[in-house]
Image 1 (cartoon, rainbow, N blue to C red):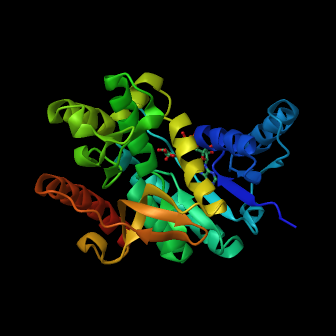
Image 2: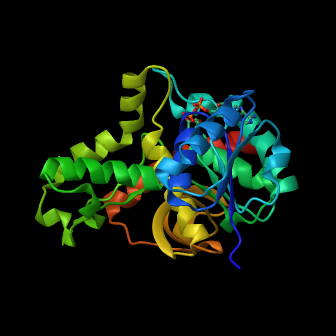
Image 3: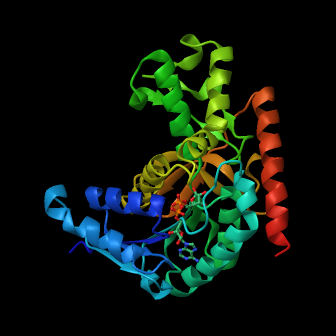
Amino acid sequence: MVSRKKIALVGAGQIGGTMALVLAQKQLGDVVLIDIAEGVPQGKALDIMEGRSVLGTSAILEGANDYTALKDSDVVIVTAGLPRKPGMSRDDLLSVNYNIIATVGKAIKEYAPNAFVIVVTNPLDAMVYAMQKVSGLPANKVVGMAGVLDSARLACFVAMELGVSAEDVQAIVMGGHGDTMVGLYNFCSVGGIPLPQLMDKETFDRLAKRTATAGGEIVALLKTGSAFYSPGVSAVKMAEAYLLDKKSVQTVAAALDGEYGVEGGLYCGVPVVIGANGVEKIFEVKLDEEEQKAFDVSLDAVKELVAWVDKQ
Ligand code: APR
């Protein structure tokens, strides 16, 4: 008998609600939404439940206001925290979201110590680092969602520029999930064709720059919050790779233990293999001098935030 998987979404806001709908559509498991806002997780769960005959899904969704609902979850995706408002950087969220992650991390340790944990809350690299420390879960079972989204954004902009389908574009954005993230020209391909054969470096650099500030572009348009559809589907892609043991190659914020010359479990966006054991392998790709320099700058930005977390 194949048992049903349980996916807990801590944070039932914009991203949490998006993920609940997509997870239900994909029938990856039953979903519990957990949020401190009374009625919100229950309301969103019931709303999606009522659409199930139309969606054609048998997933069961529930809402809860306390962390005991995390019990026995296979996957926990954390979006609890504040999103950005116009004029704010992701780093401005550091102290307020740290307190929330610390609370949620302790609850995961208590109720779902065997789960695969995906952190989405910003500032991402520092929050996933804090989650791993506070929860004490193995580093291969705690990851951050940023690279999948940043790479998808770059793929989107490349596709728009070339007038081709985004699904045929492969892109990698490495480093921290901030303005210093690194889009890789030589790693991009379009239907298997290396991008440098189709686009000059100057054009690519413009698109990579837009990618690095793409979150802010959405914040400026929405005015009341940050992007949620593309972050939601990106986190679901990571959960799916774990639940289906896909051995999927994705760029995620993973704990580095010697890879890329980084020690101490610092989290940073790198290409990894995700399967039933979480992060099963970290690929150490060869960067050219310019890319390595940009990656180092990005790492420094992450280190600064992590140093703050270490003092808490
Ligand atoms: N436990 C559970 N839920 C919490 C907690 C907590 N301690 N604190 C806050 N929340 C909930 C809020 O009540 C809210 O419903 O987290 C939810 C966050 O949802 P939104 O404000 O809609 O934010 P969202 O757009 O989903 O983004 C969430 O992801 O991308 C990042 O920067 C973004 O940090 C932000 C996070």
